[in-house]
Image (cartoon, one colour):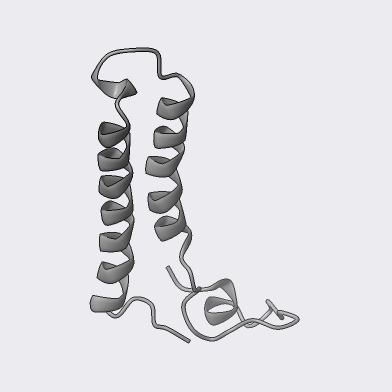
Length: 83
């Protein structure tokens, strides 16, 4: 969606970029949710396969790969850029 100052000339920002936000809220959410679930999983580990260190590290790697793919897709699709 366009920024409010693009649509309504009555909106006068103090200072606002004319570009898309960086980082995006969607990308930050896609990063924080899997990591939050991973941290909750580690806090509540009792026994079984989940208690194994290798399994928890594997899940962490998957969470980071997911977050990295979101980051890369934002750049690849041209929605965001590295400033």
